[in-house]
Length: 172
Image (cartoon, rainbow, N blue to C red; front, side, top):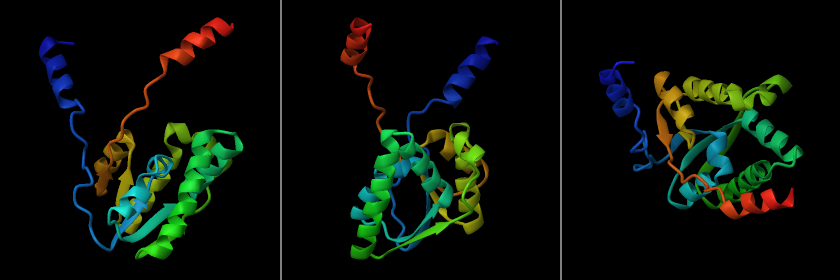
């Protein structure tokens, strides 16, 4: 690769700022929720911050959370608890929650890491002409490529604790 091309590629794809941060909350809008925003408990915080309207959750998201919980993965339980909390917040605030979409096949759930569930969520946002709320950078970029309105919520990545890796080394 030529040196000029490397500079262009680096400057073109730097992630300094979020794509479309949630600076402006649209009252009474329609929002499709991505799995990432549910697992990271972003939606309940946005509701407490004034988000109002209709929250649309694809049944594939619920299926993915159930699958993770059945495997004993913490994120699955956290996501299901967040959905339960949304039902409580719905009663206190002016919010509607809709569960839409066909439940995914076992292979789609199995290949969720490869974007199968994300594709179903994007398709729902596109068909309902809703705003997609996501904390997944790749999902946000893909949705923008399809012309879907996106609200990307940038979150901090968890740091790997060095202590745990050191102790794991000595246990062996």
